[in-house]
Each structure stands twice: as structure tokens, then as C-alpha cells.
Amino acid sequence: MIYFIITLFLFASMEVVSKPIMMSGFDPFFLTFIRFGLGLITLVAYSLYTNQITQIGKIKFKQLSLSCLLGFINVFFSMSSLQVAVKQTNAATAALIICSNPLFVLIMSILFKYEIFSLKRMMA
Image 1: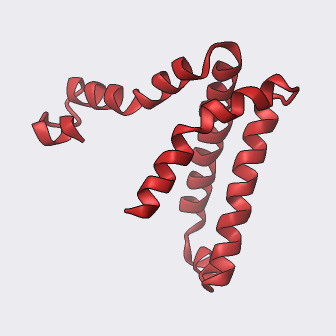
Image 2: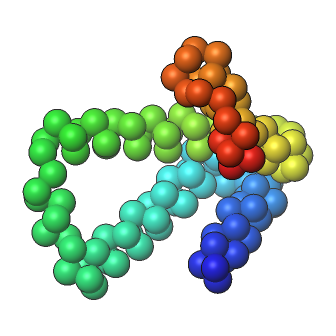
Image 3: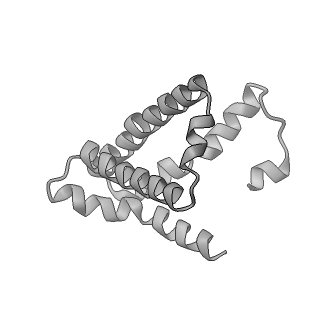
């Protein structure tokens, strides 16, 4: 539970913290690059520490390339757009829009018949 609370605090404060950083001269794209670069370094360091770095070699090339493509789209398009939105408007509005994304995904998946509506899914 403590990891959940730490993650919740860090994720919820991301937009609020990044706004003053961007106002001091950082480009939104560079800030996104720094954030995800530090995340990559952390994941690689952890996988080296736990000796799981060899597991990457077991992933098929097609799966790895698709994962890299999806990661690039997420980082470059989605997260960079979020940082531009934070710079252009207040952080609370940008955070509300990005955090409402799962709700809209659920609504669209129900409308296009990919998901069956249930109260449990709606509450989640």
C-alpha cells in the first residue's frame, strides 16, 4: 500500500511541479525527454541489480520493435502533448484532462462493443 501512495503522490504532483520548471525556460519536449530518460536509467539499473537484463534477449524482435514503437508514440506524442498543455494552461486543467482518459477509453470501448458494461468496470 505504501508504494501505491508514493506512486499516487508522485503522479498527481507531476503537472504542478513541471509548470514552474517550464516557465523557467525548459522546453516541454526536453522536459519529457529528461523524465523518461531518468525512468529508463532507473529501469535498466534495477534490471541489472536483479540480474533480469538477460530477459530482454528472450523477447522476439517483432514484439520488442512493436513495444518500442508504442513507447515512442506514448512518450513523444502523449506525454509531450501533456507538457505543452501544462505550459499553455494551468496545471489543474491539464491534469484533469489527462486523468479522465481512462473514463473516455471505457466509454468508447463500450460504444464500439469491445467491452461489456459492468458496474465493477465503471467503479474502477
